[in-house]
Each structure stands twice: as C-alpha cells, then as structure tokens.
View 1 (cartoon, rainbow, N blue to C red):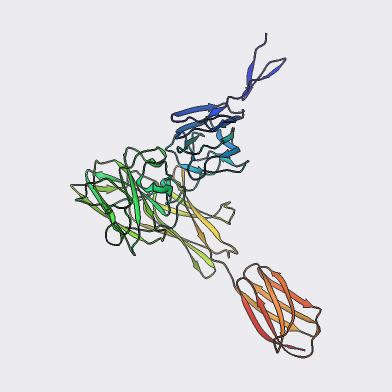
View 2 (cartoon, rainbow, N blue to C red):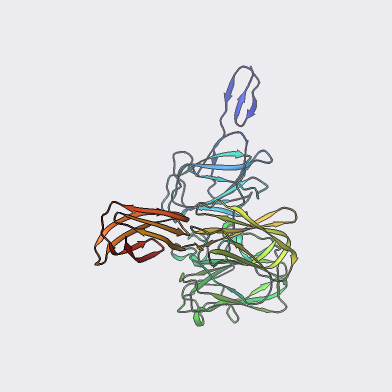
Length: 511
C-alpha cells in the first residue's frame, strides 16, 4: 500500500512511486450551461461535444465556463486543432465566468495550431466561457484545445462601438447623430433568432447603443438616414443589468429588416405609433410598435447598414406618458467620439465624453500594424460630470506607416476600461533633392526624405535617350547617393526620380 498525494496538477506521487492519473477531458455541452474548475498545474484537453476523434452534433447551443482552482491564476487555451463549418458554426469566447462577460473572440472555419487565448487582467475570476452554436447541416471534426492556468493574464481587450460590449450609453432624449464604418465581432450569425440574419449575412456595418428609462412611460424613436440608406435594427430587453443579449441567446424584443424600397422616406425606420407589429422582414414598412417601459430597465439597440455605404443617420427620440432617459447603467464614461486627423505631419487626436463617473485620467496608447500598444500620453479626466467634455492630444512623432491609437480610461479606484481603436495615416512624404553634381562618369545626389522608400533614378540625354537607370533605397533624413560607370560628354541632361510617394525631374549640366 502507499499514500498518493496530489502535488502538481493531475499527477499523484508517493515516497516510492509516481502515478500519473491524468487530467480529465473537458467536453463542450450540446445544449446545457455547465462549468468546470481545472486544477492549476495540470494540462487538460478541451474537446467539442464529439470528444476526441468524433464530430460534434447538429443544432448545438451550449455554454461552458472553465475556471482556475487558484486565486490569482488565469485560464489559457492553446489550439491543437480547430475545424468547424465556416460561416455557419461558431465558437464564442467570453472573458469571464458566464456568457454575459465581454466577448473576446468569435471563431468559425479553422484556426492555426498554436493560437493562444488567455483571460485578461480585467477579469477578476480568471475564467473563460465558451458558447458553441452549430446549424442543422454540416458537422466537421471540431476542436482540441489545451487548457492550462497562468499567472500572466492577457492585457484587457479593447472594445468599440461596433460591438455590444462597447455600446454607446444614451444619456438623454436629444437627437443622436451617428454613422457606421464596419463591424467588430460578428455577433449576429444565422443561428440567432433575429430578423436581420436572413441568408446568414449577420452584421455588415453596425453600431450598438444602450439606453434606460429613468421614469416609466412610452419610448419611441425614428432612425433617419441622410442621404438615404437601408438601416436595419434589432432591440433587446428589458434587462436588470447590462449584458450582451446576442450571446445569451435571447430573442429580440423588436426587429426590423425593412428594405429601402418599402421603409419610410429616405429609409426612415424605428418605433412609431400607430404601428402595432413587433418584427418585420424586408417587405415591412420600417415602423414597429413603441415600447412601454418601467424605470430602471435596460435596453440594447443594434443598427446595421445593409447597404454598407456608411451614410450617417439621426436617432430622434419620441418619449411620452412620462418616460425620460438617463445614464443607467452607469459606466465610467460615455464616450461620444474618438477621432484622428492630420495636422501637417502630426496626428491630432480628439475625443469627447457626454458624461463621466469617477474618471481619473485617460491613457493614450499607440501601435504600428502589429497591434503592440504602448503608452504615449496621460490626460486627466473631469472626475464626475454630466456635461460634454472635449479632450485632445497631438502625437508629434512623424509616422512612416499607418498607426493605431486607443484610449484606456482609469477610475479613481484603479479600474480600467478600453475604448475603440482608430487608425491614422498622417505620414511625412516630404522629399527634396538638396544637392546634385554630374560629371562625365558620376552622378552624386543628396536627398532629404520624410519616409523610407525605394527610388528609381534615371538619367536621360537632351533628346530623351536613357543613359543609366538604378534603384536606390532611401531612409528618413539625409541620403547620399551615387550613380557611376557611365561615360557622357559635356552638355545638358535630364534627371528623373520616381518613388511610391514622390516624383522629381530636373535639368543638369555635365561639367
């Protein structure tokens, strides 16, 4: 006999022998909501519902939460294999201990082996939750993920207005102006019960909004594009707390997919009496029954531009029977805008908040195309405010490629929230040939450039005959370039310099 002691994850040991008991496999539920706690130190196989070697089933919709056994640890999964039906079956990953946590990934088709997903530092539970949804047709081989614990969480995942978790909080009944440019995560696949999913198109260009009545009554609104556009929309609620309904599999309360041809003038649509219907397809007239609301309820609204033309819109609220809107649910800030524009060769960042709660300061972060963000500025906030506040920061660094910026908002208690990522193309394409010297066998140049690029340098005779042509690489700053090994006589010649961003030509006299 011996006494076995669990000392490292799923390995049992005694003074004389070591027994590997193995970590139990984690299997995706087909319809239920389940949870499991992994023993930190072990390595687990997480499979689809078919387990190892078998395909998953049709019409699945199950949620599993995987949590670490030790406080201060974070669940991390690494892809061994992943193959589900592309654009019809989806695995949703949430940064928390249920399906209402912030979404951090939507996966369909295949994922390369070695990809890693880790719970973030903003997630105090350290858990990850996974919802899998399959349709009734093709079932592929599914997935095998390795699940472990780590003490090094991922950085908090950014949010944007194109996702439910980054939805704009509406704080009053003033006209709301907006527009769409794309979508973040594909939060409306064909499996969800929403009129917008006909044909499996999901989101094309979407914005998300959150609103809550401070007093009971009736809420209506009109969405008016200008110029005309086909805006579809879905409304969920009521809720007692902020959540993203598309991932808790809730039915929409209102849904309109009316086409531009059948909706109101210029594509007008919304909640407007005397309409009494609550859902309509592409042949609808664009108008649905207004809401009878109770103070404190929370509603989620998603607008999607079916045309994909980014035409702006205005939401005009129609409140009656005593209804008013406030900033519930309370968020640290209500970010109205975050934009970048070029000021000569610099990037001017501007943002506005409609309200702030315990807002200590903003961190401005910057990244190149690799999305490794670094802090470049700290801007103090307005603490607590119910008025519009405007902020700005100028990045004086001259960018040689597209740069990306994001805002991190920090509360007085140290909690943080990330906001949308924006891109800037404020490159310095300045270019100047500051010195030339042409002799019978040499062409010497000094070129000052604001960017790195390759140049094609050509020398022609006065009648257009090509004498020499060479490609040279230049970098930011002063560049000394020489072309050699040609033989010309005294006279007038033409130099031509062509690059990706600049062109230059000039007559030269050979000495």
